[in-house]
Image (cartoon, rainbow, N blue to C red):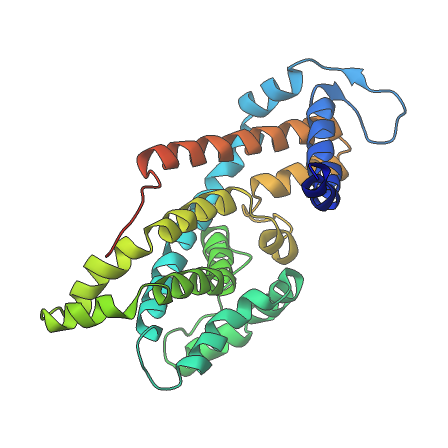
Length: 285
């Protein structure tokens, strides 16, 4: 009987170990070697790859690009929270708006990249709309101008991922007992008071989770800049840099060290955030 639970867990554990822990162990092993991915033998490099990642400007400077996506992540959290609160009440066509907000998240990242390539092309859809509204007479190079390319890509990220935060917030808000709202209305609480004293404390864990996902996601952005610009015009993120290092320049060991550094940074940021915002029990009753 004691073996019963392990038999049920065995398939999931085998998949987890095979496709998660074994690749991570291999990545750690590669990071201490010089290897082009093709040669049978690997040359030991010690901590040389890590020293290069942490001291060479071209490898850590790309982290500055993540600041655009970090700001975009906070914007999408604010937008998602606003619509989740509004649509948690009885409003007309709320199911339609729920679908509209969540639909972009269902799309494949490659498809989103190609759609926005047409949107941002010079003289394309966006320029035409702005001229029709009288907001712009000159053609802008949304993806070609280094000053606005990252803003364009970050805006694409907001459009695609707002739906995920929206669903998380909406589900958490709907889990709050309705009796609490009724009691608050009897006591004279308006919508703002309900949001501040009922909704925010009630979904505190989900808000904390969203910030963790926002920070880790902004550090690991890959699909949108890789598909839309290939990292050109100052849009190269750390993950795009690691990809190019591994598969274009055939430096598997160095790219593995970059991946390990990114993993450690994400874990450190998550730990710091959990220390600042501990996951306390929330009770509204």
